[in-house]
Image 1 (cartoon, helix red, strand yellow):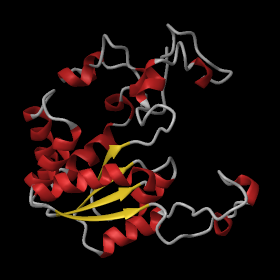
Image 2 (cartoon, rainbow, N blue to C red):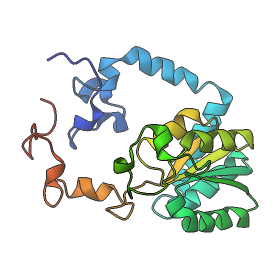
Image 3 (cartoon, helix red, strand yellow):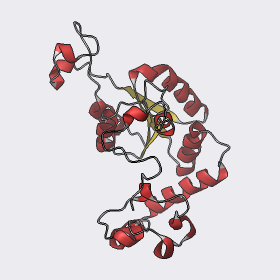
Image 4 (cartoon, helix red, strand yellow):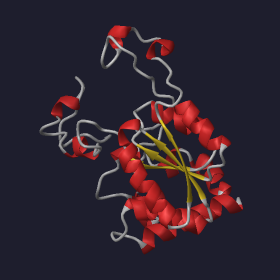
Length: 226
């Protein structure tokens, strides 16, 4: 069967050939090494850029040195310090300001400078974004729209060298990533239902969260491509 696009998500657990440098031999037909080697080669060449090479190297060292020992908070600190970044931007949900304050304190304790911007900055009414009163979370009063573009632009303007996202909503985070100029990582991923632990929905997709599947749900044992 011929495939047009890479589909690593469908790779069987018994294969994962890229991890052992055997993708060309054991990789499925939808393996990126077989589908689009030209794009892979172009991407590989970008590591020749000294900045990209340094980021990749330091990220790999943080992974190996802290493997199963460092929390993600510590990894953020270590990566920033190893890269020589001193000014850290926090793009935070207003609902996570208390936790962002804790993060800022941790970063400052390592000699790092912190800039932080909450999602509701600018106090833009949701009506300005095209919502009606009935479409608000709490109709009948003022509700500020999230303003991720301003979060990104403010961090850009004030010299952030490395951004940390704290719980921005789906879509709002996308707008932030699109407009931020500094490298960005995510510390907290918003999921109000699961205590900001969205992976739980995937782990329980065959039981408590089976309703997440649409009408084309595949059999439990046959989710991958043929």
